[in-house]
Amino acid sequence: MNASYTQRIGEIARDVQQTTLASFMLPEVTARVLPQIFMPKGKVDLEAQVFQSVIGPIGLPAYQAMYMPLQSPMNTENDYVIKMSADQLPPAQAFWSLTLYDLENGFFIPNEAMKYSVGENAGFKLDSKGGLEIHISAKQPTGVPVENWLPISRDNIGLAAQFRIYHPRLAEMGAWIKSMPAAKVVTQ
Image (cartoon, rainbow, N blue to C red):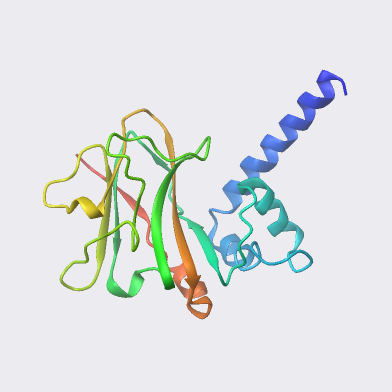
């Protein structure tokens, strides 16, 4: 293989990756593709197969786990809050978490506390009405329980926040996806 051929294949792969990830931020694409991406071979259409190849070999069928990206572009230069009322919590029969990843490389966001998720296994504290606020910030905000805080560094890193929902209530997922919480920038 010559270098120009390899370089061209790399360019095409990056274009497919960027286009696929951008399209998956659209609610109508998410609603159409997500139920398929973890199904067995032969039951997945081409669009879902492309998405699977872009995000990597996850391999769990949808009835076991669903991974839902927040539909908000984020960066470690900002602080964020994600607010969920009691009826907006992810529909998990087993457990769920919200985890932060480096958008470019897919690794956990580095932080001194080595804390990478908020959720039923990682811990969280509900408010008096059963809702939850998750804060993503460089410093723990005053009055926010440590369980509800995802620490970040100020390294100008693109963030991907993803809900990981294990043993989801599939009948509720479509409605939940349509009303999924968003990360809002906290003004300082």
